[in-house]
Image (cartoon, rainbow, N blue to C red; front, side, top):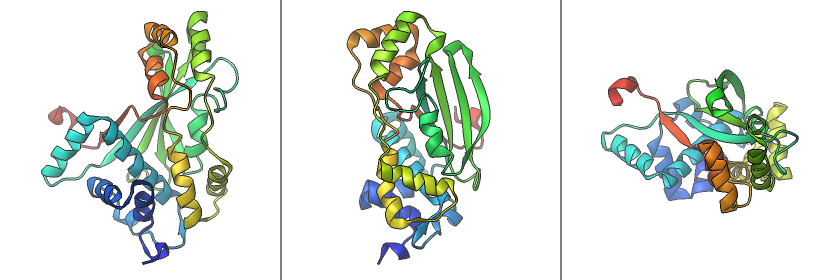
Length: 255
């Protein structure tokens, strides 16, 4: 069967995860039938966003044993996970970009906005010296997972912290190559994206959800940790998901 005749989200997920893990990931999550039904030679921004989230959720389970256990228990009850949102953290240096990356949340809004996400709510996290923003999908706000994107403001810390942050995060590389940026530009402009181009771009865009800077020197890590647990986490884990959630009817009852 040609890719053009296969379901688009399944094709994308299996291309980046492999047939076995891709099938497993899709069987874990509740994906809206309307999204799963998409077929053809082009990929909508909604289908691309959903496939991206399937792969990101799979990566989180690979890294977080407690998450994998929760999912296994859910599947054992004959249920699936409704992926509500994933969260990631970014660094905003006082001036300019973060190494070769756009500063702070800009490194991800350049991905989210072309794929159909819109900023919905701002959450001041003043105690953490951060700002959080929720992004929901314009086409399918209830069916495609949201993102909670937070930004740590280095300029709210002391000079010693700022110097360490510059040393650590200033080595950041930009993972998006010309091809991935071209695909995002097509989505931004409302143009169709051929399946072959989406298949090439997806692994590159997924690589943005990782650490882009060099491993921190231990002294710099310790200094960041002394002021901010979140900064220290970003120093070692980068822009990987720090959590993902299942949508449940009664959070209190589950807890």
